Image (cartoon, rainbow, N blue to C red; front, side, top):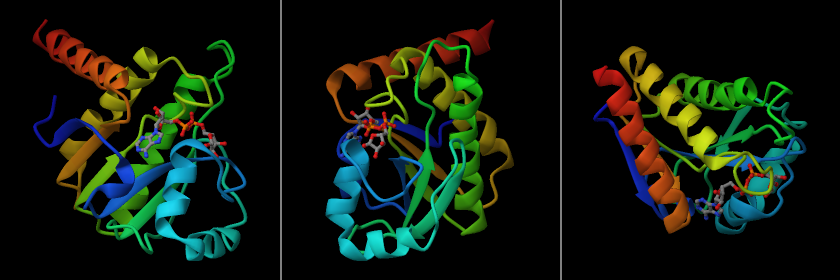
Length: 176
Ligand code: APR
């Protein structure tokens, strides 16, 4: 794993990073899970700005200010809803990471934190999702312009252990 990637267990709304990524829905008007937590922590001005964005397609990413959050920016991305793996779910999830990282670079972000996109309400198997997430993070960093730190934030101990296992698997595959 690239040394600039860190896997932690925690609440993404508390992190003092330049940008946090929100696992949103296509309306961008808030919801439950991490989306709900971010809107609650950021305050009502976030929803006001989100209204001006006119939604977001699955796999795409749009940036807003962070408002009451410690983070300067929020990058909203819409993950795929897991069906059975035959509806481009893997590619769409990869696009969420790619487009979020692109939006971060365009805004000179140096540190960015991701939740485990699509693995809650949207039902994407977390083992599979964590491999995609860590692969995209590792592939981006050699070409990074301003990003120097990527944090994968796991909300539960279970998810944290799975991400660590995927990171170990990634390193072992690299050694072969
Ligand atoms: N900090 C970090 N991670 C969190 C937090 C938090 N405060 N709260 C939840 N999570 C984790 C969940 O445990 C899960 O691992 O974020 C991951 C993504 O889960 P969801 O928030 O359910 O997002 P997702 O599966 O992408 O579904 C998106 O849910 O909340 C709605 O509006 C959202 O419709 C959209 C859908």
